[in-house]
Picture 1 (cartoon, rainbow, N blue to C red):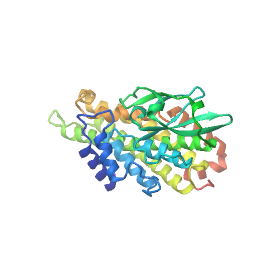
Picture 2 (picture 1 turned 60 degrees about the vertical axis):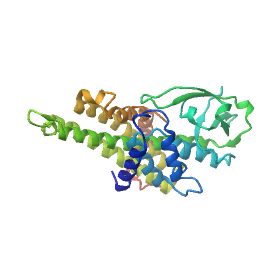
Picture 3 (picture 1 turned 135 degrees about the vertical axis):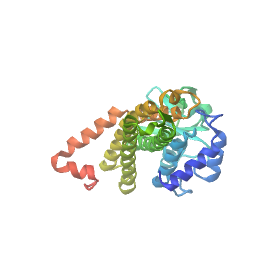
Picture 4 (picture 1 turned 180 degrees about the vertical axis):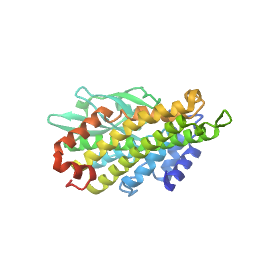
Length: 333
């Protein structure tokens, strides 16, 4: 981890009461982050961008912080700003893309939001509106890590909304995918720290278990997978900063980041629990807070298979002459 990421993670660890709010929304943490001005980090007044958001999201992933930072800022906040919707001072928002019947499944943090920025199909395009939580029906649900992922139902016929192009909906997915990849890098780094700490202090047959070659191989594979996912995700953030979200290079970079992070998660979770043994499965040990999030997040905003297919399709479309420029980022956006 970078020094900035380490410092921010330690801050979140101190503020977040893990004993009292392991999976649910933590209002005290949200209040602290709001006072620091980071719950709307990329808003016009804050003036932040993806580099700053990347550090914050990775730190939140490394702390398993139960707050909707990406949803409030990079998704709902950005979407509302793009459509020039009123209500920019709403404390907590999340975004929901509903189908033709007005239903959206697995909406993050819907029950804890003060308002939802709702997108729905309208003819050949889409419309968007900000709706108070009281104006939608929310059925609580949860992902594998126990984080709120709720079913939302709303009647679009009662909403005026603002027309938006289809590119906005696609960008919303890409933003969510990149946000989850960043959180996954933080969680993966924390898993590596936990495993290294355990294997270097736990002794067996008179020496640390890290001295055994089989354990060393497990830890080395975790470190390699973590490094690959982190490099791919950092490259995606750089590509976003250079080209924006409407470039083919950006779609490829985010697809590569999500593919790498998704496959890395499988290796990291498997090896971590093998290296930790039974203690890693207990409710009292922190490992499961991060491994369950890795497994849950890798399937949000697109499955691992869908991002693998996106990478494969882009590579095939580039052809022999364009493959290296695509991979290296030296081609035209």
